[in-house]
Length: 116
Image (cartoon, rainbow, N blue to C red; front, top):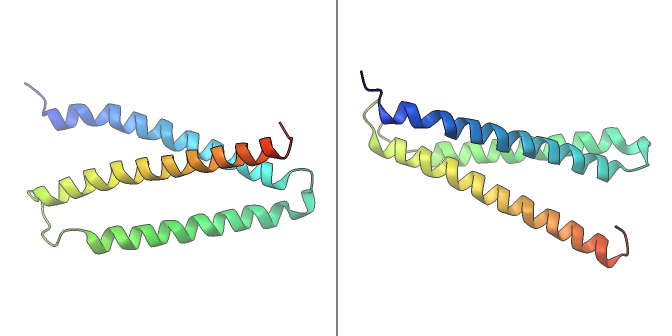
């Protein structure tokens, strides 16, 4: 019995997404510790603010994705599969590029201020 090609190719994609999400989580925690620095009194505020911003952005993204989802539903909806494939790939690419830009920006700011 030959397995369907879609079921076989999903495993490497899921593994890569898992690695990517894990790296983003570690980087965001690292950014939080950089923002807190030596001032431990404001650590709760920084963590709460980061969590609030992440929740608001995630909620807005979910609402936009649901609003743009194709009207036709069911198991044979080709537009649904194409839409989800496009959304998953584009969101990952856009937010990864944005995160890389912010890291580069922070590096440049620290470099110009004379910090290493």
